Image (cartoon, rainbow, N blue to C red; front, side, top):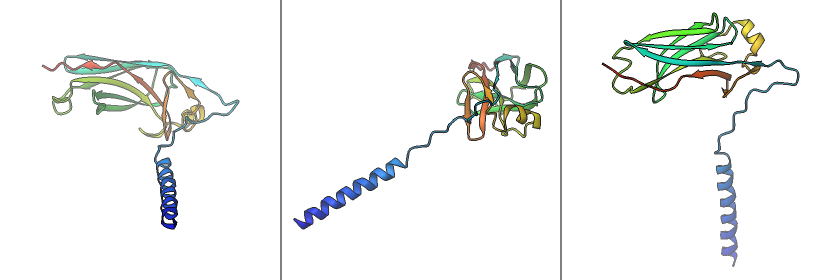
Amino acid sequence: MQIRSIKIILLVLSLILVTAVFAGCGAAALARPETLVGDPTYNVTGNCDLEINDGVITVSGQTDLMDGALLCISVNAQSGTLLDFVTITKSGDEISQDFIMTDEIYDESVVSVMGFILCVPKTYGEQPEYIYNTYGDDFRFIHYEGEIWDRDGIIVRFASDLYPLEKE
């Protein structure tokens, strides 16, 4: 009888231990950076398109983010792999960037591409002080359709459709 009681106690303790271990395995949800009542909000709009002509990929679009913001314009493969990018300083609402297709970058594994226009708090360099003063250090005051965020803050992201890449 005593051995059976010890086995039951060990089983219960084992179940408690296993439950505690698995309870700690779940990833914590990453919450959107919070704003307080009375904080300003800025509704940002934009779009992105991609064209392919004569070995040149053009990523273009519009956004009403403030002029002077650092933007990353990029081309990604169907797998999400970053193929080409450039960081620019926004000047005007119209954005356009050409990328020359080379065999080294756009090899046989790349069958389709997608363009992006991104604005993030710090990933591609420090934003000008007035951008942080307006949008917040983590862009917490920015709102837009389909917003996403990471540990650094709000990621403003406009994406084109996925286009097939026809090579000559």
